[in-house]
Image 1 (spheres, helix red, strand yellow):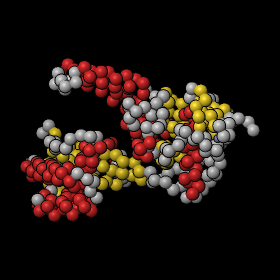
Image 2: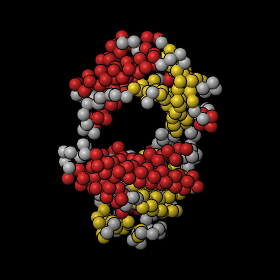
Image 3: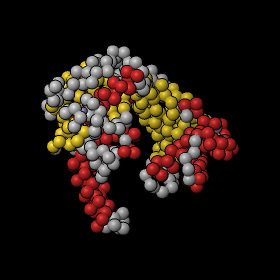
Length: 398
Ligand SMILES: [Zn+2]
């Protein structure tokens, strides 16, 4: 099956001790930070999105004349541009860099895992050799993986590096299809055979309500101290506590659900189908499944964990366009109306089904459509029969 090739990415983090003193590396990190800031300032003032080509034309030769190598220069303007993009999309202010950290392309370092050393190429052709400190087991994991960029930073008087590795996993040939719908109350999973027979339906509750409660607390406090909450220690601490709870609840849940789903998918050798949340942005106002107050971050986090756990197990994950998945009839494609609480009905063909299950049926159908076009072997484009009974789903007999 053609899809995105499953790739597992992970970082090896290690403490790094420079041989022969820290001066040159510190000098490099300061120069790098200043260069990123200069580029950030200029992109910010240009105030529109620049292509890589344009970035290259604007900044490359200046950066090289500051003493940077070709790939340093590229890393700097790409990084600066991503900082500006994310600040703008969050409606934030211009980024100001304080920390000393640099991203280094694989052409500008040499890693020797046997001897645990790293040679970094710095500005003006300086080089520095670093001794790496990390556990043996941790390092062993990355044998046979391919490394690409690394990040070196200086924090609390210590140097740290994170080397990013990736590994392409050969996906298992799928025997079943698992469609996953994420919504405010549940994560709903349906499992189909390759010829469209529904074999399992499972639902997991989400902690969205709990998270929303903490969010409401934060907002209540901020409303009460609209200007001063940042500066009064007790108030700030209270907000941080709620924020911390949100973070813990969401990560715990995401890890757990990612693991559970991947275990199930491995048992059935499924290809996992998720909705592409990036495509949802434009029309998520219409989608009742997602709570506007919370936004999409939690759904992204859950998806991230599902994808990660699945790829670790050589399972393929495919994303489909979510448009219409929660509102169209999976049998005839017409618009569904709400019959009673959580149950949707088609006026055209009489189909009736639970809202979350309808979404998974449509997700499944979209996957079949997408992949029968590019000729996935062994996947028959059958419409799932909604009356093949599962709890919470009824189909009118005809
Ligand atoms: Zn219908």
